[in-house]
Image 1: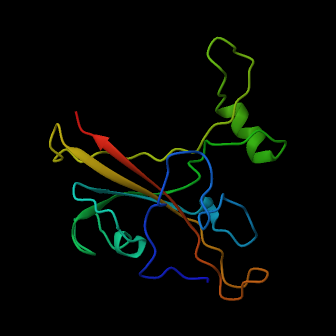
Image 2: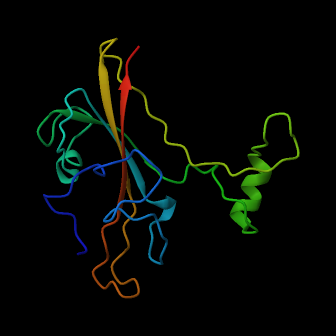
Length: 166
């Protein structure tokens, strides 16, 4: 299947361990990917359900309209924040290692990967001492015409977090 449909959940049934669940594979890269590493969307809601669907959540808008109106789009950003890197000899990695070093504290010559960041602001109207759920959704599609995928391919990675607002 190469398209998202109305039965796709926004979160994996379990995210309690670092193991992969059948049907929710670990990321693998292939040609035809978008510039900027795709788009990360962060959605927030005070009214999560146990069966929120990806296609429904993707309809939520910044003003609270869209979809069923239970949540909002909090941000949409490139996955690649322009600072992140994995340690390798590629030109992007080497220039970012120099510009954005990430040493282990107390070990100034150590070298560590710099993870990509997604910046999100919890809305000020969310009441203190209440739970708030965020859905982090990375859209990383393959463009039409990529090898073996004449129509392209939907590819999403998600994680869900319940926050205590303090």
